[in-house]
Length: 157
Image (cartoon, rainbow, N blue to C red; front, side):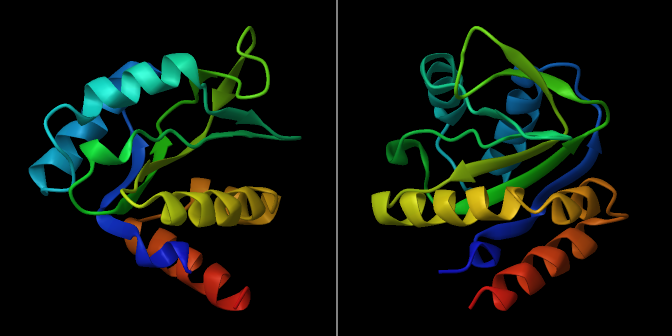
């Protein structure tokens, strides 16, 4: 499985001007809904799942988040890649009493449990590569992000 198959160019947002996690969720829900990827209640599902299962991951020099929701809210599978204009706070996955400043978000919209597990494994492997994360964060446009992620997944085949 290749995560690049799920990356949708129209859902890659660089320098997204959002001030908080919830504002980013709202903006990305609107985009995903506009393109027919999600149900209307996707946002509600995303917010409630994030409260119970935080997705911020603090790594050595940066933090990443991989928010997702239940399959019932997803019409067509996708992965959204978001680089906020300024890092935004997420509760940490491994300790929800702590927050971390996230610079890269992979929002998952997957509706097959097997896909979700495979994609999460691939993303966890990908975010361990600091140079790749830095390249995504500093990408000039959506095409560069898509190309970078396509090349990374091809290397792992």
